[in-house]
Length: 282
Length: 154
Image (cartoon, rainbow over all chains, first blue to last red):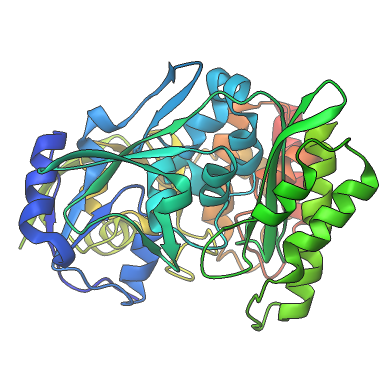
């Protein structure tokens, strides 16, 4: 239960961090808050040659408004986002989801960018990023690019990040509409068995736009595009939401494990999807 | 390799060379002899190793020593003033909040953080705050009573 030996570097600027990342690539691991990486080191599941601690890179922290929405620095601690009035006002779904991440001591250290880049399929923030149509700003010594959340999450713990890149910021566009986050976990603070995030924008009496995302049901968070299409330009009703939620989980093939069977996960995901849609529309 | 670390623990500054794979928990226990910080699971689940890092609760088993460089750490040993117990320690004793005592340091540091930010928590808030600490003896009730008693006494 002790980490393997590694070389440790703690750059103080982003340029320094990018140069080190470019030099070591696959052999390096980025240390953000450490709440996922350090267990992997302690259990010796990860054994990087170089650990790049981003904790001293001030440029990567902070929350500010951008184009009516939000920009959150990758190294912003989860507890800071949780307490931020700006986040509460502009992206309440983020705050709703943060309450489900671990416990206070975990959120004191864990970062927004760390959770996104780690890409656990049962984690809250990747699902939220998809539901809010977030854009992830990544940088390397080669330059900067912006990746839509829809293209960022590739598979279990795998993202579109190249080995020389690091996530610098997540941009959340302005949301016109209600949102809801639902999850079921065996114990308070555990990773979710399954969860759902929804954003619903109403236009008069019809649903103008909707985004529905499920987590814990596959190797990455899943956008329920079919269910979204069923709901666009439809009058919101319990029946319409229930039907769309059923469609959202119909084709899913979650895994079975010691915590829950695949069938249980699929059923609960359907219930949570419906609740999320109903709450987001209310 | 070794890295140079400046860290203040319970008010005492330490300037040391350390192996970067050393966790803050092992540094406290093995190098400083502060064995009040307990190691249970060593992967962030049980909460026994909770300390205050720059005032905020943190898992010392999930903190590399390099991350604590330049920081202030408070452990269970920093709570009492010599023989005089901290009011939370008094309240926990009066409520029989300890049994085997293994989880206790983590609960205490978590509760210190809670009472600093929220001096009069509700029972629900206490339960939420200590949700990341596991106790296998008490059933939690006496711990919750102890924290609420400390809050009541101010």
